[in-house]
Amino acid sequence: MELDSNDEVVSIKAGQDHTCFLTKFGHVLTCGWGADGQLGQVDQYKVSPIPKKVKGDIEGTKIISLATKGDFVLALDSAGEVYGWGNNEYNVSVV
Image (cartoon, rainbow, N blue to C red; front, side, top):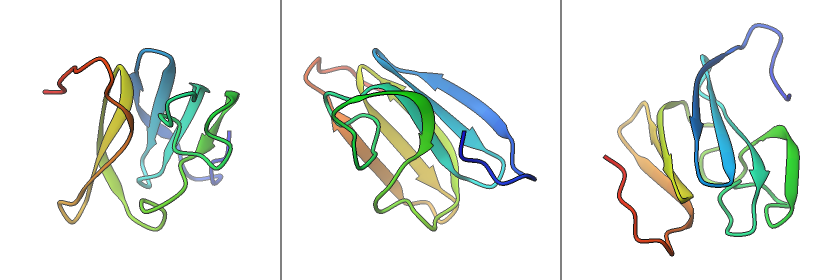
Protein backbone atom coordinates (compact mmCIF):
# COMPACT_ATOMS: atom_id res chain seq x y z
CA MET A 1 0.00 0.00 0.00
CA GLU A 2 1.29 3.49 -0.86
CA LEU A 3 1.13 5.24 2.53
CA ASP A 4 3.48 7.65 4.26
CA SER A 5 4.99 6.17 7.42
CA ASN A 6 2.80 8.38 9.67
CA ASP A 7 -0.42 7.89 7.70
CA GLU A 8 -3.02 5.21 8.43
CA VAL A 9 -6.34 4.01 7.06
CA VAL A 10 -9.30 5.45 8.98
CA SER A 11 -12.20 4.33 6.77
CA ILE A 12 -12.90 1.52 4.31
CA LYS A 13 -15.79 1.51 1.83
CA ALA A 14 -16.72 -1.35 -0.50
CA GLY A 15 -18.36 -0.98 -3.90
CA GLN A 16 -19.57 -3.70 -6.19
CA ASP A 17 -16.15 -4.75 -7.50
CA HIS A 18 -13.75 -2.42 -5.68
CA THR A 19 -12.68 -1.19 -2.27
CA CYS A 20 -11.79 2.38 -1.21
CA PHE A 21 -9.55 3.36 1.68
CA LEU A 22 -9.45 6.84 3.28
CA THR A 23 -6.39 7.80 5.32
CA LYS A 24 -6.04 10.25 8.21
CA PHE A 25 -4.07 12.60 5.89
CA GLY A 26 -6.96 12.62 3.41
CA HIS A 27 -5.55 10.32 0.75
CA VAL A 28 -7.78 7.85 -1.12
CA LEU A 29 -6.52 4.46 -2.22
CA THR A 30 -8.47 1.90 -4.25
CA CYS A 31 -8.13 -1.68 -5.36
CA GLY A 32 -10.25 -4.27 -7.14
CA TRP A 33 -11.70 -4.41 -10.62
CA GLY A 34 -11.57 -1.11 -12.47
CA ALA A 35 -13.44 -1.86 -15.70
CA ASP A 36 -15.77 1.11 -15.19
CA GLY A 37 -13.18 3.64 -13.98
CA GLN A 38 -14.11 3.19 -10.32
CA LEU A 39 -10.46 2.87 -9.24
CA GLY A 40 -9.53 6.38 -10.39
CA GLN A 41 -6.05 5.22 -11.34
CA VAL A 42 -3.97 5.63 -14.49
CA ASP A 43 -4.26 1.90 -15.25
CA GLN A 44 -7.84 1.95 -13.98
CA TYR A 45 -9.39 -0.43 -16.48
CA LYS A 46 -7.44 -3.40 -15.12
CA VAL A 47 -7.59 -5.46 -11.95
CA SER A 48 -5.55 -3.85 -9.17
CA PRO A 49 -5.04 -6.26 -6.25
CA ILE A 50 -2.85 -3.81 -4.30
CA PRO A 51 -4.37 -0.51 -3.08
CA LYS A 52 -2.97 2.50 -4.95
CA LYS A 53 -3.59 6.23 -4.54
CA VAL A 54 -6.32 7.71 -6.70
CA LYS A 55 -5.00 10.03 -9.42
CA GLY A 56 -6.52 13.13 -11.00
CA ASP A 57 -8.29 16.14 -9.55
CA ILE A 58 -8.24 14.90 -5.93
CA GLU A 59 -4.44 14.77 -5.82
CA GLY A 60 -3.26 17.46 -3.41
CA THR A 61 -6.64 17.81 -1.69
CA LYS A 62 -7.61 16.49 1.73
CA ILE A 63 -10.52 14.11 1.36
CA ILE A 64 -12.63 13.84 4.52
CA SER A 65 -15.41 11.47 3.45
CA LEU A 66 -16.03 8.74 0.87
CA ALA A 67 -19.13 7.04 -0.46
CA THR A 68 -19.27 4.24 -2.99
CA LYS A 69 -21.90 1.98 -4.44
CA GLY A 70 -22.07 -0.03 -7.62
CA ASP A 71 -19.17 1.09 -9.80
CA PHE A 72 -18.73 4.73 -8.77
CA VAL A 73 -17.13 6.73 -5.97
CA LEU A 74 -17.89 10.13 -4.44
CA ALA A 75 -15.33 11.99 -2.33
CA LEU A 76 -15.81 15.13 -0.22
CA ASP A 77 -12.79 17.32 0.49
CA SER A 78 -12.12 19.62 3.44
CA ALA A 79 -13.19 22.68 1.39
CA GLY A 80 -16.62 21.19 0.65
CA GLU A 81 -15.88 20.18 -2.96
CA VAL A 82 -17.30 16.88 -4.20
CA TYR A 83 -15.44 14.65 -6.66
CA GLY A 84 -16.80 11.64 -8.48
CA TRP A 85 -15.50 8.93 -10.77
CA GLY A 86 -16.58 5.61 -12.21
CA ASN A 87 -19.85 4.59 -13.82
CA ASN A 88 -23.42 4.57 -12.49
CA GLU A 89 -24.87 2.18 -15.04
CA TYR A 90 -26.93 0.50 -12.29
CA ASN A 91 -28.67 3.79 -11.38
CA VAL A 92 -27.98 3.49 -7.65
CA SER A 93 -27.95 6.37 -5.20
CA VAL A 94 -25.56 7.08 -2.34
CA VAL A 95 -27.07 8.61 0.74
